[in-house]
Amino acid sequence: MSDDLEILLTNDDGIRSTGIRALYDALSEHANVTVVAPASDRSACGRSISHAVDVHEHDLGYAVEGTPADCVVAGLAELGPFPDLVVAGCNEGANLGEYVLGRSGTISAAVEAAFFDVPAIATSLYVPADDETPYYEFDVTTDDFAEAARVTTFLAEHALDAGVFDHAAYLNVNVPLPDGDPAPIEITRPSKRYEMDAERNGDAVHLTDRVWESMDPESLPDPEGTDRRAVVEGRISVSPLTAPHATNHHEILEELAAAYRSQ
View (cartoon, rainbow, N blue to C red):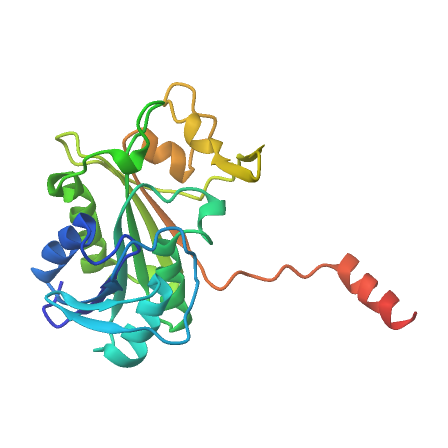
């Protein structure tokens, strides 16, 4: 990785999170890194955008009173320098499956970069949860992000020159917790599982993502080749993805359009 490489680093957990510091320290050894990140936790906000945001100088760069998408637009269009690569993360908690792609602030930062024609890497750490403790209550340390920082630095160093982004707008990277030995990379596709549920309780409706209730490697229903299976089984999942979404033209819809004109 050349020292002349410019990287814009952002996230959705907030500029004070352990994950963004881990990536900043690793990437800064090989590139010029400017952080433009939310001033507070803006997880699961998708590509929400603001009309105006306050910006504060920070020892890493800039703290923005807004969303990850705000940060990317502000960073690329104004705060600069204009980067060769946008990196989002490292998120505490995995971003797995098709349905997460539009919900995650981490992924949305990468998608926003794609509309600027800037390649991006979104990196998340898979933190296994159990019935008693959700992933966001685990005490994750800087050392837990070591593998995520290592693979993100590797991809930032090699993917641009290798031509990876000639075929992908961004990479969705999910990394298991380190277990001593470096984890292998598997090129994956997003899982199609969707198990959102809702239950009314008085005046409230409680929404539950039940996908995370069936993450046992021995009984995982996701097929081979998916991001979820790879990371649960201890491999680094890298999904090469495109933005914007493709349009699927087909004859039936054309026939309906013709019928509408003839009414």
